[in-house]
Image 1 (cartoon, helix red, strand yellow):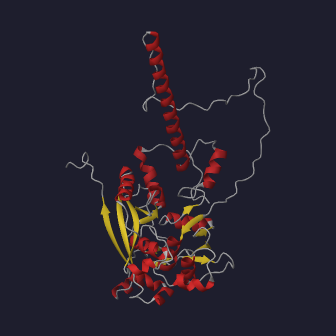
Image 2: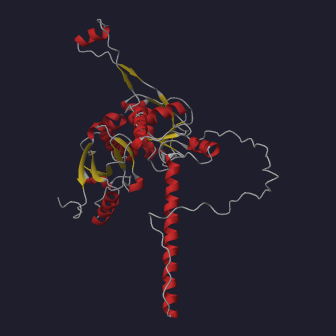
Image 3: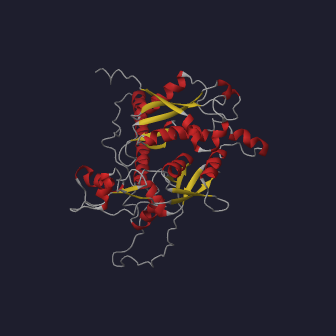
Amino acid sequence: MSLIGPSQPRKPSGKGGAHRAENNRIYANPLPLLFITPGNTRYISPHRVLGLFGLSGVRIENPHCEGVLDPATRSVWITNSKDAMILWRRGFFGKGDLSRSEPSWYTRQVNARKAAGKYLTSEEIREKRRKERQQFKLDRSKALAEAAAEKEAAFAEGREASTVAIPSGATWKPQPAEGLSLPSVHPEQGIPEEDPIEEDPVEEVEHLQLTLQEAFFLLWNLDCLTVLDSVTDEAMGLKSIWSAFKRVYHPPGIAPNLSSTYDGRFDNPFLVHYAAYHYYRSLGWVVKGGIKFCVDYLLYKRGPVFAHAEFAIVVLPVYEDPEDQKTSPFDLNNASPFSWTWLSTINRVNSQVQKTLILTYVTIPARSRVNPEVLSSPAALSHYSVREVVLRRFIPARMRD
């Protein structure tokens, strides 16, 4: 499910100004909801009269997207291309299941056929650069090995070693693929014409995949998403969605008599991670998964297409009552005290990519203080609290000032 059209040749602009302006236009709305303000008029309008009484005349446009719950992948699938485009371009919700972020699989296939790789998507450019860097390292290693072998041979023979060119990042250029040659044709014969081969049209097979935290934020806070049951294909109510999202984290094959035990736990992984996700999303950050950098979330100021993430979030569950942790059926990540080796590793990884590490402590309410019956509705989230600690690695060479 591609949200971008096939690449078209365009005139180069100074310092990418045209490209930034285009991104500002496409991703101008931070949320799927649109707040439409009526145009100004010279005469008294009903909207101005409402303003005198403290009422707003702004009209809210709700896209009402639809998705299907998939318990196996713990996600909600958006199969409609229009809904997927709205959710991605208005808040960067979800990711393409065949792409790294923005669903662009269809566009990549079309570009491969039409332009023969001349115009590439961002993912194709990134993969091309990675292959070139890998080839550069191989060529450089080969040249260094040849230079060392030449010096040893010259020393053994008592002669001066010949110079071996060692490629550098400034002079090395990728070589075209070998083994690709056109058949030889006599000039008088000309190039034989071939019958055009009709290719089958590219079928769209990609969908937008929302995490459970993203889906619940959209349906509970913004009321712009309807979740369908994967079995009955019917719309699910808030109460059934709330129970289904928590039940996804239950162990497979659990006995029916133990289901109520899991339902009455405040340390359900969905609840803990949603508390952190809701906290940062409500502050205006674009929250995306951070498994690539060994963290739970990444925080973007505007979105992935504008700049890299500034902060890396590690969710640390904290039990208000230590007895709840001892009797918990869930094995929460980072719930036990971490080691300094682990902390130094995570901090170093994110410092190398210019990200500030934030330890986000989510306090899990004690069952002895809060009645587990409140877990029957999202009102239970009001009993969670979030604290954060910013951690930065001290680098003497960079922080002398």
